[in-house]
Image (tube, rainbow, N blue to C red; front, side, top):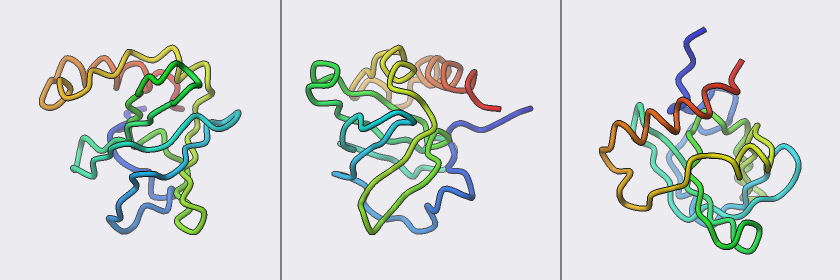
Length: 116
């Protein structure tokens, strides 16, 4: 099965391009932080989550394919990964990720392993 982790699922409710900055992010097993940055670029959509004190202020990049629901009323994004899966993800490399195909391959490969 070939799944694009860099595109929003049709069922996610991400039908309009709205600013997701500041939205709360809920993993499968609880809150993980807030969106600090996002991209709706076709083929490379993602959210960057500031985890705050949860993992010492680390930011993590989550491909759009991990998003299962965007609740615009509650300003909350639900993802289908556990806290442990997100914590174990390759580290977010701030602005270095832009245009870095190796980085996108590592992230996409990591999260793609959980899609089914």
